[in-house]
Length: 175
Image 1 (cartoon, rainbow, N blue to C red):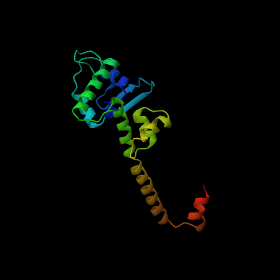
Image 2: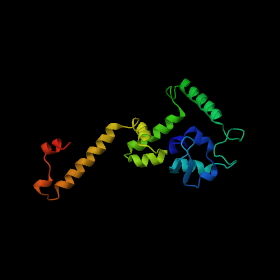
Image 3: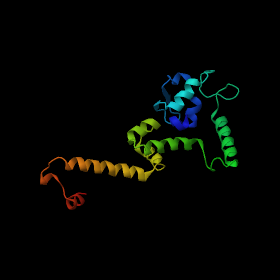
Image 4: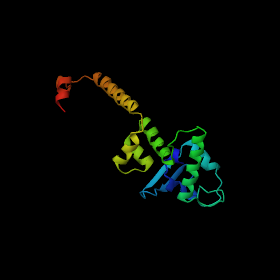
């Protein structure tokens, strides 16, 4: 759920089956209290729909009890340590990194900031910008200039008066 829904550990342990309708996962973020509604991607949707509803919470430990934050963090750190020792992952992997990976993926897909903020439950542009740093800035720049090229091509097909077409020199001076 962290990599497909961008959940924090506190959200992950608190989410209940009543938060899941078979397509949309809705929860209040533990950090901010803001409502987040995620149309679950197919892998997450399939996993949740196959899940057994043994309790109110979606995530239960081996004893059928809800995880505590510390209990889940400990389990995850042990898992990461084991994976690092087996050289299956690099040192430094953490649960919250999955949230950052999702934010970067949404950025790389070219989604606008408002869409990314809604998906991750951010309210401020500043919070969302942190996740952009993990994205492929070159690809974003390429998308921007391909859009500009497309716009310029379309604009050149429409007859315009000389007055409405700023020269390069005028455009530079307009800053």
